[in-house]
Image (cartoon, rainbow, N blue to C red):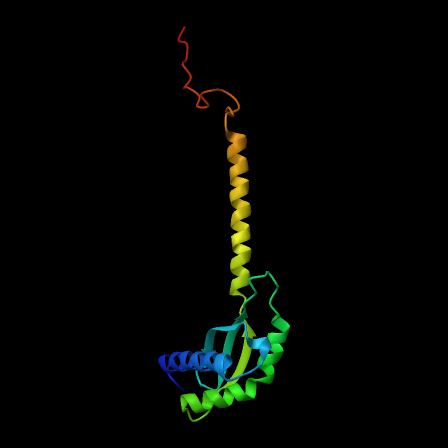
Length: 148
């Protein structure tokens, strides 16, 4: 078994190698907007999960996630051989590519926060100038017994 620092170091190196290979070596146009976000390596250093995200255009054209996934799957063998040559480990880890959902989750959270802020503004608008229901002093004074 490898220690955790070695697995983290190998994961970081695999991220660098795969990102560089996607940018300079692999000539697939579907991978032009792919960014490697993270890599996790198992404790035995035999499997590596590479997380990626597909960035959209400035023209608000949605990214082609299915095309990028297919291109990564077809380039998996080439990328694994580059990882093996670049890391120098005895056993080159198998690569698994997983789409990273962090950007979509962040966008969803931002939308939820905007809706909450709008709801808070509506409550503040309705509360402006409102008077409390009931008595002006909601706390009851203690009873004073008449001693006749």
